[in-house]
Image 1: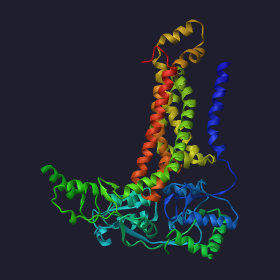
Image 2: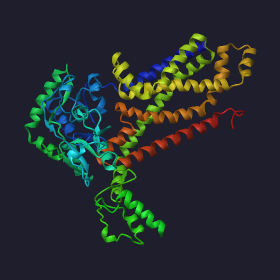
Image 3: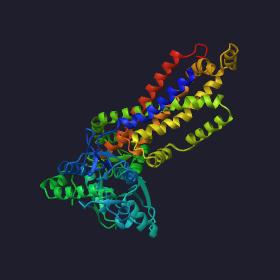
Image 4: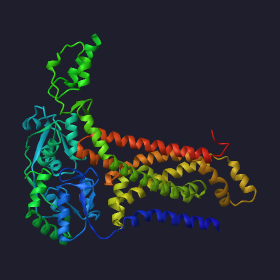
Length: 254
Length: 283
């Protein structure tokens, strides 16, 4: 008798434990925006621990304008599309580059910026773009990005002999340029300028050949309603003077 | 004298310390007591960082690093609370599942034992990261439960911990003298009563040192929840580092907080062990 009650109590306890996490997080329906929290100036965490950045502020504005609630959820970048498809998040507004490959998985809003990919080196390095493409030079790149894929497919698989090293975030790749573990890093001009503005001793040595791409918000294929809301909101935002102010504030050069 | 010159040579050759990069002022003054290179040849640009042994630092970077730590500390400490919540949740879940597993492993029949063996093999044999992704993107999504990354981290760590805790408890049960069970049976207790009132109260106390080990492992493993995007300490250190570019200082801070938590936790469990320990067994 006693033991039976004991085991039943035990089971209840286990289920309570399992349910705790779920119930504690049940909320009203709000759209969750998945961001790469390590991608300044598009999305990052500010001094007070709140999400900040061009995309965060833009989506906040759109949410208010179009009348929906939004929460910004830091998500690991190389798992961000699976997270979207698994409904862990509802949209990605975090400087995401539009590619054919990604278009098969998600729908993109109208573009609001462009990505120009460049190589950065230490400020005093003598490396040029031509020399960087030769044997034994080490490149750093953020894992799961368009640039990582492009370099893999259009350079390494076409016979270029340099070595490519993957990092969790663009700032970490640049950190290792400064540490000297890699000779250069492939980052967007936006990221590069942001880092240079912070006083980190790096310089842009030039484009390495990846075509320029546009940047847009991503939503699930079936979420056409949300896509329309975002498109409309972006159009309205870009028509206001605030859009230019935001771009200038976050140092996003078009 | 000679040694100083050799040391200076080494610095010059290995670190390019007189180049355009900027120099550690302190080293420069120290090694220039008997100058081979006149100070006027040395350039010092205080706005720039430089690299020593692969760590970005420098006289001018230290204040920036400290500012970054100071600014980021409340945010980091909130993250430490997330780690603690994950650890406590996983420890509790692991104990709740691990206790019946241990009892079944020792006293169960052959079928129970082999089932428990399979469970333990599964959760001990697969890397934590693989299990986290398997549960987060696989099992939970398939079953239609929309669990947050935080919940998944607790459940996965709890299930793994159950496997380990069952073995800690099993070891403790087996370490009790056989006479305890025999004596209990001989005074007319049933086997189940004997397990509850004689074996487990002793075994639980004996397993506390093993638990403090499990606590420190769980605490460190909780940092892996970073991969799912849980805003725990490590993820937050990365967030602040991405904004301030003071990676060294922030990871040092995160490491120190983890160290402190490990120390406090194991210390606390040790106190508990001393308090509830069985007098004859305490050393």
